[in-house]
Length: 212
Length: 212
DNA sequence: GGTGATGGATAGTTACGCTATCTGCCCCAC
DNA sequence: GTGGGGCAGATAGCGTAACTATCCATCACC
Image (cartoon, rainbow over all chains, first blue to last red; front, side):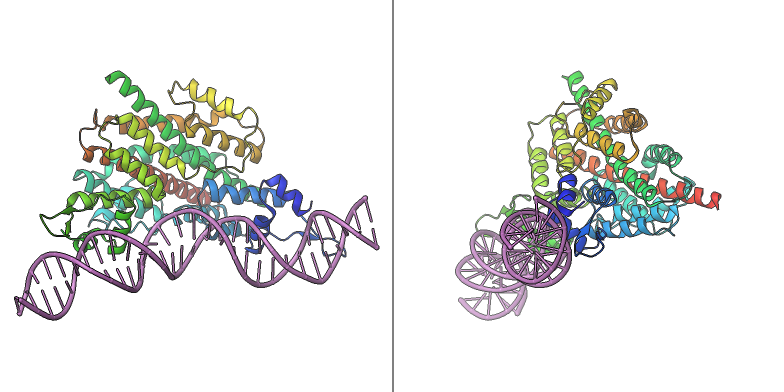
């Protein structure tokens, strides 16, 4: 198809698609035999859809999107590597959580908590830092807080992660599989956030009605 | 304290604090008896901390932050109202998930799913829309998808929401309570996301090692 | 053969979240 | 009492990110 059709089918404007092409987020179209004309395929359509998923649902910057797409295209990368890139990209955006000055000891408590769970997570994983900062912030709000408050969250996280892992392929044999893996990670994270908020809305509403 | 001290204790530059004052995110300092000098208190410090939590951890725009702060300051607002504002603000940022054209029927399936859970959630809740779009996107990736894949997520969401609801006050008697409620909602959501990502990193890593 | 889309390049725009500068005033240490 | 630094308030500017618009030569298609 030509760029006009790619535009109408993807819902993105032609200039935006050209912009993504320039930025290297979208591979160039295929040249016809002789002319200067380029043609785009279904692949381009799904790539555009993935880009929008990452930016809109995953709220990634285009720089992070580029990293993820490179990982998707990197056929030599093992599944764990791809997941790491996605995680990195999802965390990248809230990297500068630099207000809370990380109370002394909080990092150690988080580390021993994570290790206590038996999780094999890199020492440098940004998740540890996020958790440390959340713990510190919670303590500012209401005095000392046991790191154990995270236990139910960790349990839930593990249960869901296990479910998701079960539906992953053993290895990434095609780009399509890689793209699906990435998309599912982002989509299910958004779904969980939405359900959490709805559950809270429900419970608070019901409590209010009972109390009144 | 004067603005210089507020700056050093909060870690924010004086111009930034002035900017927040201009934007109405931070209430003006208290005027001394006669002079033109203004003085700031602990309240300003915790307000700044809340602003940064909402922007950095909650990734809200300053416009959303303003709405939330107004709700926090609105002493007449019931607890459920405050929660609704926070939820709204957290969702506001991914409002324009306008790529996926929402497959026919997906919205109905999501609605009956949510109702089937027995959750009392407003028809207009943005969570329904997010879930609809996630479902549609999942179906694009891998054909038909049962809406029931959300069941484990909903269960986990409900369990965590119940825990969080248990530690909420009955009513919001002080601004401090309101601010704490808001902060906890944002922080625990970030913690859950971090733990989910770490759990995935762990599981994928272990699977990779077993498979190899 | 003409006309409307396309490719490729360059420049401009908008929104956001600050940041810098300026002016006049005021506080307070000396 | 005074001079120098900090402060309030106002206005203007900056930097990044993510597009968007324009141009023009070329080309496909009717």
